[in-house]
Image 1: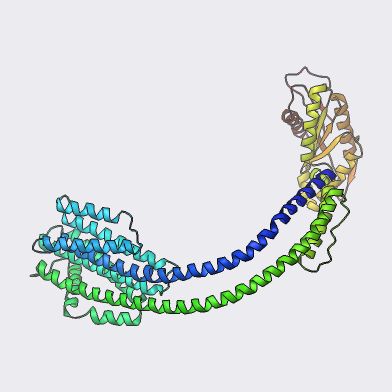
Image 2: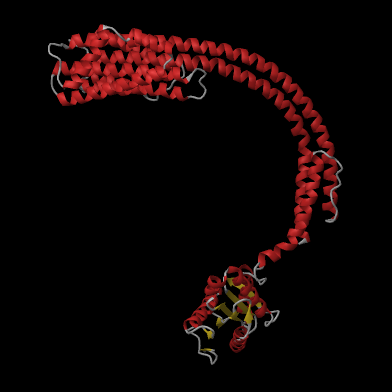
Length: 554
């Protein structure tokens, strides 16, 4: 026990010696790193704020809006433009779309595989391996990726403009996108006049999405932007375009006399009005970002001043605390080394400092007291049943293993008695668990007074006990079990009077394992219970030669 405690304290002492060797360097480096890191952090943050706030918020929103707009125009010229495709105009629009996507990449926005998907779609359209409606849907899917990227930007915690500004802008782009899809769908329906149900369902769905995005825009947008929308997104052309969609969705039929070119121009006017609102929204966001940058630079200037002053104060305090700590540590380590070197466990660390080191020394002394007491109590707590004071199941398993190994070598006898209290559950149910506990303690005390010091008496669990008889043969074990049965039957127990116990007995045989040994005793106890309780039953290996003491009786 002492050697174990000494080893622990020596290890602790060596650890502290290692700390002593490096603590000076660590503390001195701490002051240097704190100052250098503080100024470096300020510089990095300033660069991060100034660049990210402008590029990632203004340029990202603007470039995403431009990319969405150019892609919408390419979709219209590619899939649903009336009176045939304008190849020259389409070629120029593709260049405009590519330029917008290049700007996206320059703004640090990575739409993984976007340009490759667009290139494949363009090839399919050129080679006419995809019909106009499918091409429209493919372009729409690409557009939604751009809009979803703006939604992601809206959720970025690093943004320094009101989230509602970016959110309303994203809803505005989605509103324009669904209006563009309605323009394309209705134009295709007018031109081809087939798949009426499919076209009607698609138009109704797009109209609902358009109205919902417009509602969300009004919820998030500032009053200034809402007023601008009301001023721009109005007039005869806009009312006719939206009214035409409502009429078709309500009636399920195309308007009489409306050509695809007339509808295309009508819807294009409404889309252009939304584009004007989108441009105005971008201007408002840019102004907000510039304002935020001004505030940020001003706050950064004052932050630098405060940080420098604070850093100097921290440096002075750190140096003062470092030297005080090192002096106190030297004294404490000297005491610990004395304790571990001289094995003087009654000695304690002398520290008269009222500061933290003194508190540490006091706590270490208290830890020594506790460790000494715990070492003394450990074996008792680990091996003792707290209720009855007998050995516990863990201790029994350890001793049984040791004895089994010994019996395999010297082939001497060993017996096991397992018994439990008859009808103990009714004791708890009738008199309560407190009385039941008293019965268990009395039972353990009664049995312990009748056995030898070499016998191992343990509480197995609940109301069940075991007795390991290290050198008893069959006759001696049964005799002792019968003696205990009679003693218990004739004794009075607190509050309940008479009690009885059932006993199972077995002996060790050379082919036994600990498990089979215990199982036979348990089987014998079961037989005792089955045959009427308050009796002793013996069980041995079925393959062994019967013995005269194999019996079951009272």
